[in-house]
Image (cartoon, rainbow, N blue to C red; front, side):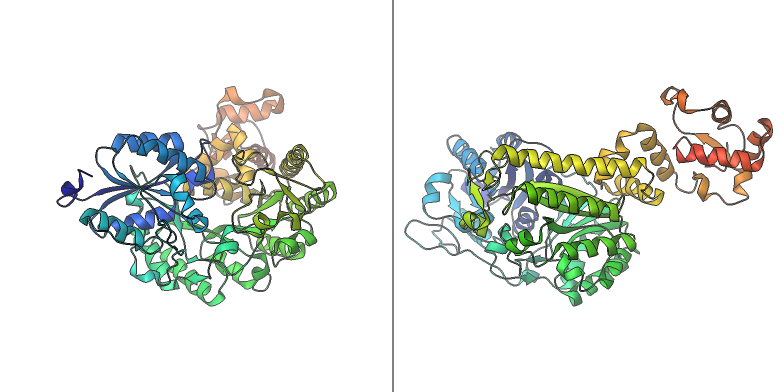
Length: 567
């Protein structure tokens, strides 16, 4: 390639790409891909100018084409969700441009030399690429023929590369994201591999073993990345084995608690319900060190289905974790249910829905429930033997799936019936959440906490997205309350003296108010807002302290007024 001599005197530019098919707003766009960020850090520490990019296919190609004259190589992260898109993009690029194209990522585990023809890449590197990618690129710069560990070559066996000692590699840096603009979420991974073997999970079905980073290394990375941050952060622990080792977990929790004395952040992790019921005391410690949201695997409300998945947790375990988390004041607990999974039938759907609604009853305002369809990931038990789970795969490669349509049905349910089952489940959950809010079952403190997490840390839970956030008056109320914390208060926050001397402040514009819900005295109070103290307003309206107190509490409860110490 005629541009190679130039790279000997200038830093070679490399773009690491994680792209998915053309549906915006999906999880992959919200959560940083630590795989490509870690590789970018390695390359930049060794003389390259590497950037990481995440986006849908059309934006990815457009971005690459803007950089085409400067690029030495483009490296694609390939997983099961995007493998067909990656193959198509590479075919498009290789017909037009001269830079190198490399494929890596978890999907390479199941690739063979036949995939050299399918992907048309200059190199396919199997496994964790911190060393192999750098070696491959250095060899191209020097014009050397080097067989890189994990590289797929014709008629040669390539083993997937697993790394053991992560301490010698660079920490990922958000600044290595192309056109980086800071946002609250900051992803962290504390381990690779998984000790569990859930039938639907790629990591559990394919990982060599669990390789955990030390608590010291995890905390050092977090400290370094927080030091470069400009605002509040939401740490997102990506690995689903975060709670596996109690001793390491306690060290991390202690370190997080100390870091929060210096930096403003909260955090999320995944927890295993089977582990948490055995170590319930850790939930309190996790909350005290900044955990505001946790996810546990729920999958189904039917014990036999959970056993088939190999979950190592029962519906009773899940229920107990929900009870503990609610009692301990965890703001948000999220869980996912698989619809149309193992042995699904009308009866199992009904039982799962019943169990989900019971959990919501146990924890009004805390649970954030979601659903997925089965994704037959390569190497998993469901992919290899779907018949053992009563599953019929209609589209094994998931080419028809954009997370909104199933690729399988069960022996009892057709594809349309699986879709309808998910729709009914979502409706039942949504109606229960609305009912809880309308009946005043959700504690006001929880509602305020959800708004605080949304405004300050970018965490929007289900209740906020689907109920609170649809009420403009309520949103404006909490935005002002949180933005002017201490300078604005709710009625129940006022001290006795403040209930005389503070000033009533109307929140919504009069044009937004439904006059049918207000009596004349309430209208008068609102018209005096911003002008007089509470006691002055009482005098003007000839109201006793008890009467105006009851009226102000009612208006405050309806998110119509707040109180300030000055006009």
